[in-house]
Length: 623
Image (cartoon, rainbow, N blue to C red; front, side, top):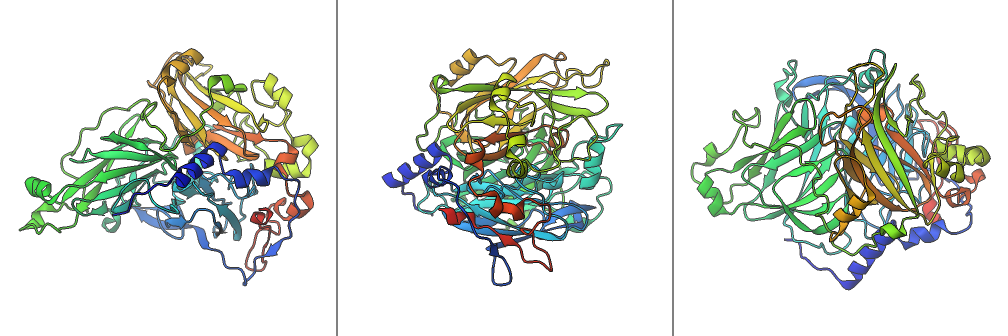
């Protein structure tokens, strides 16, 4: 069993990390004058710490064959484990012949490495076909926890994703005997390109509900064409009796809110949310949205308890919520037979088929799941309402015209410049544009403030360093100029912020009211998150009526170009994304333009291929 020990120095380091956002070292870096860097040639003498290859392959998933985007040929991609406080170079090969790729390190702030956030047309050019890019990644001290990586291009994140674990540098703040990953994905029996084209087409072609859940890459599809018995299998989670396991549950999903539980095991304790340790909080079920991560400690049964039930296998049941119909899949929690059962063969279940009878009756959507209940393990400096310097209200609405789009403050954004809809789609990444022509592309802060936060010229949300901004997400009933259609339609949205964690101030039904926010916050201790949910609370309402809100507070201390978007992949393609620019030109462009020229061209010298060794800046040399 892992030893539990936390020193005063550990507490101070963790508190300082969460107070500053990415640590005092990085902030020191970002307040120094411009620093010139010399490029390094990453030829055969350079060995990346990790190598990832993104491909497209025709594989069998849950019994059905489909062309799928993969990382290192597996679904999910390999588990990456990196230490705190060490620069890690991750080489990503785009081995697809006809599509771009990026890789995003979900939940990690990349302020010190401005071109390594993996957001195409925001912070970097995408990796061209048959090229590679070396990402510079560093997890600051105190940032240990559960993350994941995924492509940020089109619908690729549906399958091109894998766990990313930042290992604790010292003693853990809880006891455990083992560590298990539960990686949740969904799958459709159609290609990424077919999904993207359908969402951007006239007439609109919706993806429909998924053909099933993938639990650690395995499933039994509900597709009638799922006839390959070799991949129709339930994932197995191996445990031993009378042990404590840290379950790292990762919501790498595309569309659905997931509700899951373990058959006859209602003894879970949440101890981490989005890579922040929390005080232990008892739950019976886990509800998790796309982009979220939870760690829960599971206390397994004793030999005596197992002998009473006469079983060594129990089902993990996963169901979708806030969707037109429920999609259900299973995995198996399998105990090692260390109790020396007699005749235990009957206590095993088949992993080649689903249970004949549904093991659990899971409740409806748990609106506001864990809101106002989780408390940070270490003190954090939560901004009060009096400290807020500015408020930005993000009005969210489903709008039907010629195209079906999700609007945020009457604007939609996508990286796909071929989408012919009336939508913001940059031809050059914003960070690149700032380097090429700061005068034209640095957003006008004053104009943005007068326009509710959005600069009308650059279609970005600027923020000044040192600001404390309250961001309010307010959903409205959908609008269609004709009767029917999307009029009044609502949906559930997991909002994710790049570049920094936000203080999650909770949410509620109906219309946002600042007095209600403060009432709900009394006696609570908000935690830092990077993905939280704007719930719909009901499927429909009147067109244009306010229905469901969420509030964040952020300290603007990480200069850079950062995405803030709904993490539902379909909604992202349909425009539910925003770009934020934190800091002015001097804050963001610490390295001179002349030094970063190789980053400013699509397929430039910073991208390698079979005939060209990339010329790469090592941003950690500024430290």
